[in-house]
Amino acid sequence: MTKSIVDETSVKIEENVEPILVRELVPVAKQCSECQAEFGCGVASAIEQGGCWCQDLPAIMPLGTLSDCLCKACLAKVIGVEINKQLDAAGSPKARLALAEPYRHQTELVENIDFTIEDGRYVFSEWYHLKRARCCGNDCRHCVYK
Image (cartoon, rainbow, N blue to C red; front, side, top):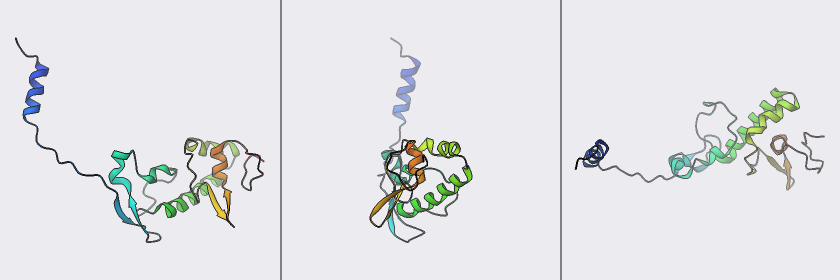
């Protein structure tokens, strides 16, 4: 009985396999370039866990805007400022809605992007309301549907 070409190739590959080094994927200790706080950067474990925590934030900034990693709080502030700039530049309500539409699936609220806390109260941002895509009827300060 003769072996098929696929079987012979498989045998040759298996015979010539060299051991593969398996590296443990762990978060990398980083220092925020803004506030100097230490935090865990998840880029090293991104493959295993489906991505770094920073990938949960809106990807609204051009690549190369930051010189180094920021902690979650500082990155959220920078992204919040950039979002407001882009909303102002968008102008029309329809263009503003279109800017937020790709991020509607991001349901986790992020301070300084979706809300701020003032006198112990949550104040939802225009961005949050645009992502929500409808009025809640609570007469919110930044409601875009009034």
